[in-house]
Length: 363
Ligand code: SF4
Ligand code: SF4
Image (cartoon, rainbow, N blue to C red):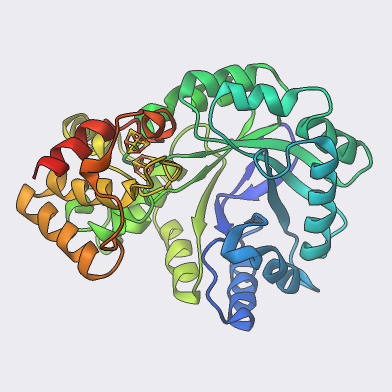
C-alpha cells in the first residue's frame, strides 16, 4: 500500500480508500470485506448515515471492533437533513455510536452543491458551528467538506480556510471540470479524496469503449481508472466503493504497477474527452428532484449510448428500461419536460438535459 499525508492533518492515509456504500444484505460478509481491506493496508474508511439504507455505519462499527490495524473513519452530515448546529451534534453522536469509536477522524459537510448552500452551512447557529463545537470537545479530528460544485467555487471554499480537506467526484470523464479545485487544494495543502472514480459505473459498463485508458498488459479498465486518479498531483486518496472480497483484491492489485500515468496517455484521454466523453451522464442522480418526476438519469444514461454508439442503440436501451420496469407505464416521459432548468443547475456533469430530453421526446 502507498500512504500519503492528508493535507496538514499529520495523518498518513492509504491511497486507496474504502467507500462503504456498496454492502449487500449479508452483514457478516460485509464485515469480512472491511477487515480484509484493512489487512491489505487500507486505512481510510468512508461512510455516511444514509449509505446502504442506513446500515453502512453500523457494519463498519462491527468490523472496527478489535480490528488490529490502525484505521481512520470518515462520515458526513447533510444540510438538507441536519440544518442547524443541534441537529449536527445529534448526528455526530449517532455516528460515533454506530461506528463504535470515540472520535470521527474526518467529518464532512456533505454534498455542497453551490455557494448558497455553503453560506447556509457557515451561518451562525448552522451546521459548521455545531461541528466545530464537537471538534473542540474532541469528538472530531478534522472538519472537511464534500462537493459537486464547479472548480472555481471549490477554490473559493478552500481559500476561506475553514476546512482541512475536500471530497470530490473526479474521474476520467469529468476531470477537466474539477481541475481548478484540485489546483487550489494543492496550493493550500488541503487533503483531497476523490469519489466516483468509475464514473458512476459508466466506465465498467462500457469497458470496451474505455479500453484505451489502460497502460499495462493484464490490468482491468477499473484499475486503470483508479490509477488515473491516484497518479494525479494533489490527490491524496482514491475512494472506491467495495462490496465484495473480489473488489477489494482487484482494487489493491492496481498498485502492482507503478501509480503513474504517462503524459501521452493523459493527452490521449484529454483529446477523447474533448471529442465526446465530457458529455456523458454518470448516473449520480443529483437531478432527482424534477418537478415533473421525470427519471432524468435513466433517459440521460440511455443517451450515453447515442454518444458512445448510435441512436438505434439508445432507442433499444429506452425500450429495455421500459420492459425492465425502470421506467413504468404511467411514469412521465422525456417529452413531459417543461424546461424549468432545475436539473441543469444541479447536474454534476453540466449536461444540456433539456435539449437531450427534447431530442429523445421527438424520437
Ligand atoms: S428541465 Fe425538465 S427534466 Fe429538468 S427538472 Fe425541469 S421539468 Fe424536469
Ligand atoms: S443528468 Fe447530470 S445530475 Fe442527472 S444523473 Fe446524469 S450526470 Fe447526474
